[in-house]
Length: 143
Image (spheres, rainbow, N blue to C red):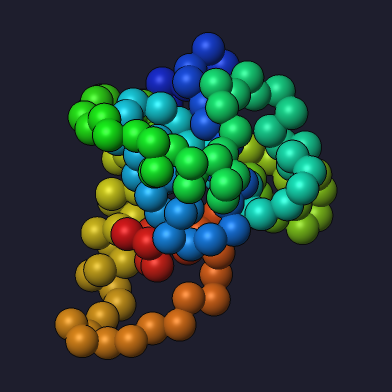
């Protein structure tokens, strides 16, 4: 098993966004620009699992709206698929929430497995119950 290419010197971006559209825009902008998206369920307080991270920025709804209104840049930086692209927090059901690092390859393989397992109708309408800050929410709802 290969180790993830993970370092605390990476460019982490905290996503603390309530609006699902703005969350989607910020998530894709973060990972496609070569940065690492750290997914926090919307809250006024940063989760303990992210306390040690050195964020290059922390995005909320108003920050993303401002960026969308003023930005005209485009361009993606694609990284090796073994690099971490997303960090989320475990639920902390039995202990303190822990950071969970997912590589691009992790996410794509989960996406492929989900598409093979579940039957999604082309014209289906689905209710999004699980937040995008949850691994299942990212893979099965957003992607």
